[in-house]
Every structure is written in C-alpha cells, then in structure tokens.
Image (cartoon, rainbow, N blue to C red; front, side, top):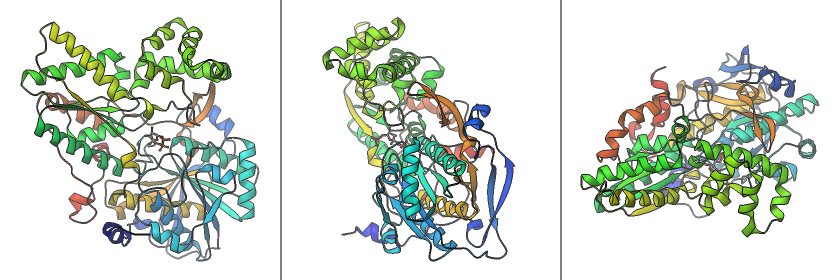
Length: 549
Ligand code: FBP
C-alpha cells in the first residue's frame, strides 16, 4: 500500500505510557462502588458484577510470570481517531503478559462476534496501523449485543479460539453492552472477561474517573481548523453568514470545544436551550438579533456553530420524540404499512393533541426524520437532520420581518456546512495517540488482573503522559435506568455539557464580545512534530475542567 510522507514519519512515533505501566505492574483495589443512580435496579440486573471496587495500577517491585492468553477485540459504533492505537497498545500489553499471547479482531463490530467473523492480529498487521486514524484494521459496526442467543453464539467462537478476554472499544451504548455481556459470562461461569474502552468523538462518555473519551481531542482539532479557515474566508470576503453544524449526537461538547478554540459569533449549546426552556423560534430570534447587530456596524458576515442534537433539546420536540419513540415501539408495523404520503397524517392522528401540534409545526423533512428508523440503540439519527439549513432559513425569514419593521438594515446570505465524518478518522493527535495506546495497554493490565465488567481508565490527562494514572472502573458504576424503545433499560449515563462547568462558563463570559466584534481565532492544522505547546496540548474542555481541581 502506498504511504504518504507523513504516514511514514508517523509510523515511527512511540506513544508514551503512564509511569505505572512501564515496568512490572500491580493492581490495588479501592473501595466498593455504586451506580450513579437507580442502585437497587442496577444491582438486581447485575448481581455478579455490581459493586466491584475501583482498581489502580502501581509499579511492582518484581515481575510476576504470566501465562499466554488469547484475547479478542471489537471496535463498536462510530469511528474515532486513535482506535488503531488502542488495539496496538492492547497488542503490546498482551505480548508483555506473555510473548505467545494472541490477539483476534472481530470484524465489522459486535456483529463479527455473533457471526464468527474474525482475523488474527499479528505483529506485521499491527505495525501497519500504529498511530494511524480510522477503524479499518478490523472495521466497526453498530450491532447491539443484547440477546442470550447473541451471547451464546459469541461464546461458541470465543471457546473455539480459546479466547479468555474480550475488549470492546465503544461509546456509552457499546460499553453498556460490554457490561451486560460481562455479567452474563460471569453469572454463567463462562471464563471470559469483558473489558471496555471509552471511545467517541462526542465527548459524552466521561465522569470523575473517565476524564474524556478518545477521539474527541483530534476530531475537535480537525473541525476547529476548518472553522478557523471558514472564519478567515468570511472575514476576507465579508459577505456570508456560515451556518456550521457539528457532530456530537445529543451533547454539545464538540460545538462548545470548537467555539472555545475559534471564537465564532454564535454557538448554540443544546443543554442551555433545554435549561432555558427555549422554543425553536427563540433560538432563531437570538441569531437574527446578532446578525442585525453586526449589520448595524456594517458587518454582514459571521459564523454560527450548531450542535447536531439541537432539535432533540428543544423541550417541546424532546417530549414529542419521547412519545414518538413509544408510539413507534408499539405500532411500528402499522406505521410502516401506511403509504409514505399519508404517514405524516397517521402520526398526527396517533399523537396526543399537544405533541401532534408540535409535530405538525415542524418542516416536513425534519418531521419525517423523527419517524425514520432509530439506530440499533434507539437513538434518532440526528446527523441526518439538516438543522443548519432549517435555522438559516428561519433566520432569513425573521430578518425579512425585522427589515419590514425597520429593525434591520443589511444583507443576509448564508452558506451551510456539516462537519462530522471529516474528523472521525483523522490521524490521532499526539494526545489521542498516547491516550489511546495507554487505554489499550491498560486494558491488557486489567485482563492480567483477572477482572471483568471494567472500563479502562487513564486519568490526570492534563499532565504529561508519564504522570497519568492508570486503572479500571466497574462499568455498572456509570449506569442508570433510562427509557429505550418504550422500556426501562440499564444504560451508561450520558455526560452532557454542564452549564455550571468551567468550559461553558468560560464561553458564556466571552460570547457577547464574540457576537458583536470579530474575535476569530485560527487554530490551524494539527501538528505532530514540533514544540510541545503546539503539538501536545489537550482540548480546552479538559484544560478548563481541570484548572479548578
Ligand atoms: P458513537 O457514539 O458511536 O461514537 O458515534 C458518534 C457519531 O459520530 C455521532 O456524533 C453521530 O451522530 C453518529 O456517530 C453518526 O453515526 P453514523 O456513523 O452511523 O452515521
């Protein structure tokens, strides 16, 4: 395969490890844990894996002889920069346990385990993928592992390959699956450990012990580079308003981080919209007011960042989606049998009066998207809703009204962008390259410690990598009960943007200035070689979150 000059140079990069993992390692167990909410229900659902202690790794004085072990690995869900380094760290970690250990990759996500599709990941394969972006080493998929049949089919291949531990690299939903699988295999004495690794560009899989999910750092740096480029273009031509939708599913962490890096004129934060109980029209009015204020100064240009999950956070739409989820879970077949042209009316007829009127008020494309297939985890596929176009159209209409009322003099011309896929497979930043390698290596240490139902945890991330702390946390600790597909299910609690958290407060302090004045910052592309302040800085979100600690 032909390689670029950067690929060749980057292949030689040796990711850094926390000091505790560099020699012989010993596991120290902390206090027993509890789930974040619904303790009794979660305990009843996870009798064998609930309440386990946190694990911390420390340097050991002498190596303990290890036995060869066969390990399986799965990449689950959306791509995130650094997945290949998790796998290479895991590979090096299992080889450190014993050089005859073997690593098998199940292909195209959790479905590979059920369908018995796998490859052995040998040293030459791993070496091809070190420090590269993408998940193409084994591919990824969104199959949800939830039925006994799937678990048993998986067990067949694990037994055939003599695999004693499975590592699932995924987001909140995939790690929920990891916990369910760990419980099943432990309760049935199957002799298979299950370990999770926190992946998602969305940045919403985090808590005190998982400071960030991998991929967020690189993806937001890629988007911020592009937003900076657009800001410079817009400040040069001074004739467009750019509406930029950013991935991130429900949470607005990506939009907020990019705003902190690039200082756009407007950034909508869905969590704030919900907290203030705002309507879509109020969000639109806010943007239109900024456009008008800038126009009054002769500035008919600007940038607006929009989190892709915005629609779901408008309280009226959120309540509508909840009722739609239940309706489609109960009567999905009936709905599917209705002629496409009549489906809108069918939905209106089957919703309560309050939600029927919200549904009827939505533009046809958005309304339709809310009724289309959920992903296998029950999520509305928000990346398919063109919120950036919806908002700019509504802002255009509002400005026309304001013009008629004499409240706006200016020109409004919009450009639209959606950044998501562009950042998910970028070569990992130095931060993600190190963090991912450490997560994978640490997962091997958790396997060696004999635990199951744990997530690999590497912390203290604003410090240099050697000072990072390594260990594991029971996945049940992160769980609560939520309604999915019309039923209450145990799931990992999503971490949304905290409005009293330092990153949002930092943004809120400055946004009035950014709105009116042109304060753009141009971060430029990710740098892999050069001074540490250019190459090794973690995200601003992480930096602000840790400043006060
Ligand atoms: P994960 O939660 O699986 O990491 O996926 C994140 C994400 O990139 C979201 O930001 C986005 O909404 C979604 O995946 C898009 O999914 P798909 O790749 O299936 O189009």
